[in-house]
Length: 342
Image 1 (cartoon, helix red, strand yellow):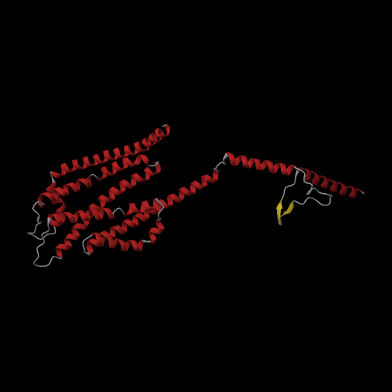
Image 2 (cartoon, helix red, strand yellow):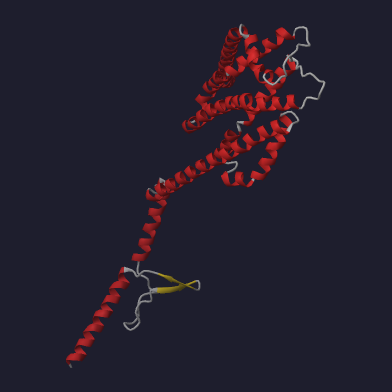
């Protein structure tokens, strides 16, 4: 009975924290949903103005008399509605990352918190930077190219739903591409690679950048190049940061090694006792008189190098042997003095 009660208590102890984590995760997801809905309710009243702002890069490049069209019956309402919802999610990204950080941070070590928080903030800034770059740099050049290559006799009239899907795809592609420095820094911090290995793969990255630009952008050389070049430059920026991180890590390891050399790690009590016992046994063996190594005559002093197993190994003299050696030297000196006097 007691064993069953103990098993039940242990099961409840393991399940309770898991349920608490699920409840906390649910609460944070609800907060995110509430914030997104709040942004959506504000932006929905300006949905048409927001769509006109997003369509401005294309409207400026259209020929005179040309406009955008809506081929769907509900497209004039659903398209601005969709844009308002997506814009609300994009605006709420910092809050989403904040809730994610608040959920994960209690389980991280202090050094992991110092690394994770700047990486999360940098990833949000770079994602927004990719969206801004695509809107103000890529779209004007790309739409100017499309309108300039329109065949004669064809009027360019873009559907509003297709245009929205196109720009959202481009926003996501450039926002994701601008995360390349974060990826390289994370790979360096985790020890998967280093700056030298990344630099050695530079030719493959350049080719891969153009391949990604070909897959994520329309089939024109301008948009492909405008995506591939920033990805390559951001990769080079990631290598620079990876070198800085690697140099700091090497300096820290060198400082730790110096500290370990200056402050050796104390031995454990068991090791210290074993070393003391071995020293005592060595001292007792040295103090004991050795019949084999005792000098038999004065003319044959003690040989400090004894051959053991074919190897010459130094053996210190015991106290008795030392006294015998000193007596022999003293007798020799007295004999020489008597010979001089005679």
